[in-house]
Amino acid sequence: MYRAYFVDDEPHALNTLTGNPLFYDSGYQTVGSSTNPIKALDEIKRLNPDVVFTDLKMPKLTGIELMEQLRDKGARCEFVIISAYGEFDAARSFYNMKGFDYLTKPVSDKNLLILLEKLSGRLAGNKAEPSVTANTPSPELDKMIAYMRENLTEKHTLESLSEKFDTNYTYICDLFSTHLGTTFVSYLTKLRMDAAAEYLKDKNKSVKEIAALCGYDYLYFIQVFKKYHACTPTAYREGRR
Image 1 (spheres, rainbow, N blue to C red):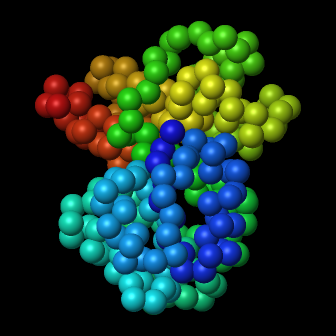
Image 2 (image 1 turned 135 degrees about the vertical axis):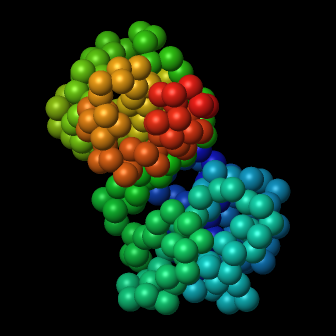
Image 3 (image 1 turned 60 degrees about the vertical axis):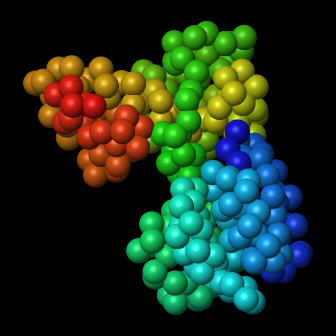
């Protein structure tokens, strides 16, 4: 599971966020939280989470300043800023510092789920995943995996998979977590990246064509591939990895 740390100076807002079961269902465990951004600074350095969810406007240290100081100290975790509606125009530097994304208060389950799926895709490149060829003890999960593998060009999401197999996304999350020790998005990313590596052996296929075959637009495919394989698709094809 991915390790998440939460910062918000409002205790109620913090408890609401950390208590949302969508985090656990999507493969995230809370390793720490704080209403004090100064205290959080030290704890995040010590705990080294995969992602930090932080409020934008806080006393003593804003979410942007927290991110800046952690980046300066070498933190490599992802950052998600949480802001009230209309505040985020003042935080454009967040993206310049390669912050991952932001959520607008009040955080809806739909927007949170969409963000967590995207975030899991980003984090997947840093995590070793199980073999994509192994059968599982769950026939339902095996059918889902087979469907995903055979339809990589589709824009798979937890919602689309739950509709296809007439079940709910929480149950799907549990299947991937229990039987594979990973998340739906992480596993899908591995399926696509392994397929991309195979496609690259065929030099008659362009990188842009391979991106489409794996269900990505071209530019995002390059980003994910570099994160996952630590080199560009062209370098991988030429053996420069």
